[in-house]
Amino acid sequence: MKTLLHSDPLWGILALSVSLAFGVGNSNHLEISALSSSSPSMRPTALVTGSTDGIGVTTAKNLAAKGYNVLIHGRSDTRIKEAAETVESFCRHHSDDPGRVVPLPAADVSTVQGCEKLVSNVNSTLDNNQDLSALTVLMNNAGVYEESFSQTTDGLETTFAVNVLAPFVITSLLLPTLLAQPKSRIVIASSISQGRSIRDWEDVAYCKRGYSAHGAYSDSKLLDAMLSMEIASRLQKAGLGTDRITCNCLDPGTVNTKMLLAGWGRIGIDAQDALDETFLCSSTKVEHLTGEYFVGQSPRRASSTAYDLEERDKLWTLLSSFAFEAAKSWDSTLSTANSAEK
Image (cartoon, rainbow, N blue to C red; front, side, top):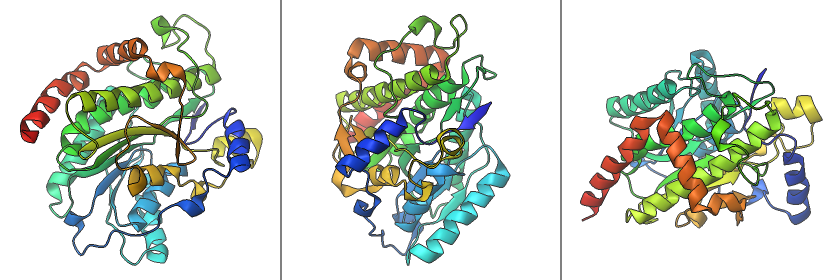
């Protein structure tokens, strides 16, 4: 059984109690000023993956209300259309100057080909809509929690494929588009449920060992933090400062998604109040921070493995073996970006 997830499973309950105790993650602290502009081409454009429900659609709604042009992504054309209408309706009631809401063609990011299709859809949409600016924000929000073992058509365990490989492929292939604008942001949804270490580098696809839903999920969220730190590091080493692009990750919070309600009841916040992704995508308070992990809109220490260069190199090598073209694109993209800087 596949459950789309935009928050935390069991361990997220702990995050909620900590948040309540210390007052973090309060949606009242979210900046609510809109970007005022008469032309959509002068507004930043954001892609929110998995933005047809849950935290994804909440992030899309609030970014659009703040004046961002927002690209809506999902696996179903029908649900994408419905989500776009939901975002537009929200903006009519919550913004005097909203951004444009643009539904993308459906794309399933559980495969490399599906991720490539999404990137193609984004680039063609931007090319065919001259009133849209280049991509400024990439919110890698889409994620799954697999209650039982399943594989994608690429032969990979689904949790790993959607939660880890997809952000790598999408980010890598959209990097040239992101670098076309200053102050671009890459954000990856990690989790307070991230594990402490990777249990088995030789069997991330669970082909030999017994499957654990919690194990696969916590591994994937640790890998997300590692990926975020590695991307930030590579961009900085290439001479691309935070005035050009940043990459951060976050725990999106304990939120009453369908899975949480089914398993534990209403013990989190409502999805409409899950604003931490919006904060990290848009707040001026974090515009010069990169390589950070956020919990409740504040930087926190991720699992120590996220800062281990050898472990991150293993991850990059592994992802590159599954998505060679995406990995290969980094050299040419960073070379071009450096030439432009000079």
